[in-house]
Image (cartoon, rainbow, N blue to C red; front, side, top):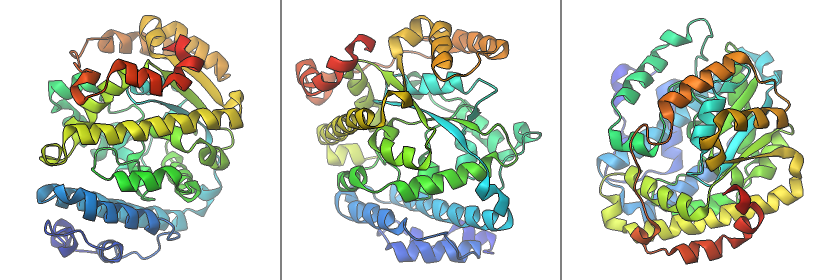
Length: 394
């Protein structure tokens, strides 16, 4: 096992250059004392994102570069630890993962609010940010309230600035986008990095190995913290629904809806706020927005086509407007369509949550398509295939 000093610094984290995948892999093995990644399919994605960063991502430099590399190294180390844990707990690899119920849609269509409120249901198992960022050892139900990982997350959330709170709901115990789980397979969407070439590869990549490892991680996390019926949320699920269903045949997609004009302008504002320091100024706000626009348009086309092939049985629709106006009524309908009982404890939690998080409770997020050169008419025309089918929900 690496010493404390080795854990803090490593030559592969130099802010001067982007290393090769082999260097990062060797560093992860050295720092953990472990060797088995449980298959090396992830190397293709790691190579793709490093190549994209070396070219298009040259503006990610200095401390920001070290931060990105530290994240990659942490995810490689986590993957080694997940595999080591499974070797010691082989029965977990056979454990059932129920569902999952997966909230998805265009970003800024209510995926977070829907995922957060469904996380309040005691019959569902949320994927918390703090446990996926450091999954070994898995949390224990009896002691997770005081888990140091959870306590650190509470402290981080308390320090979030009001502008971010107006953009996004931060809830320590709610399900969160599985960037770190897919990150261990080097298959995250990576929308807050200037890597359009990587995203082009990612849209067409075979995600079966990534979601197989995803399932392996959920088996670990549920091992001492039931239940095993998962509630997940991420807008990026819409890109690879058929691969997801191949791994999770009982998956159900709760598809959230909002008019693309409002959703996309909100997301452009959100994305540039989370880019590494200085990158937006060097790359250009409009260039970033146009790349993300093309990416999300392609994703929605992929999702609509996949829905036709998979069939309506995998889908439940939620209007952001409907959820805001009648949260309890919407959730009763969603539960009925998912064949889930709607319990009194859940209802009480929803009422309390809505009181704290109603529209405007954390400030207002101001945005407009014109800020990045898009007209309402352009967005409406490009997404007509979507609004013609789901416009009644927008």
